[in-house]
Amino acid sequence: MTESGQIQTPKSDIREIVADNAALVAEVAAVRESLASERQSMAQLIAELDRYTAASEEERRLLREQNSILQQMNITLQKQARAEKQKGIGKLLLGLVVGGAVGVIAAQ
Image 1 (cartoon, rainbow, N blue to C red):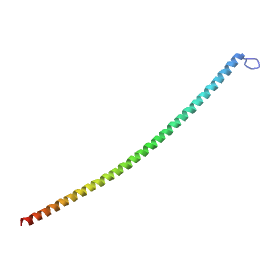
Image 2 (image 1 turned 90 degrees about the horizontal axis):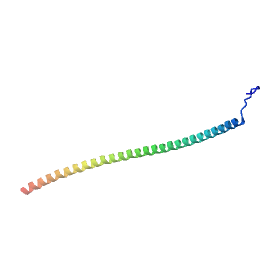
Image 3 (image 1 turned 90 degrees about the vertical axis):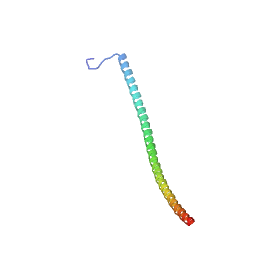
Image 4 (image 1 turned 180 degrees about the vertical axis):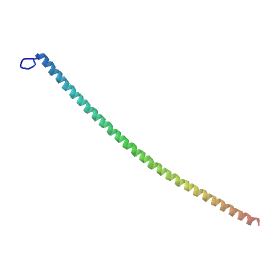
């Protein structure tokens, strides 16, 4: 240090400091670029996950709708089966009555 308060350093030290500073500036720029790239990758990943989630929810909704339709069809088929069974029982009873009547008439 001089009497006037200025710091004296050799030019080689100043060059080394400037070179180190330039290297640090370049490193900071590289880190910022890397962070920006990572942020972009993360944003893309989040967007893909959002699309997947939306598609999955739509698929679940469609499956619930399809399940509801199948349940309604099953109920309808069960009702038809019961109606056919009752119709069959009615025909059987009618056949027995008619058969019994014919048997009675034939027996006379």
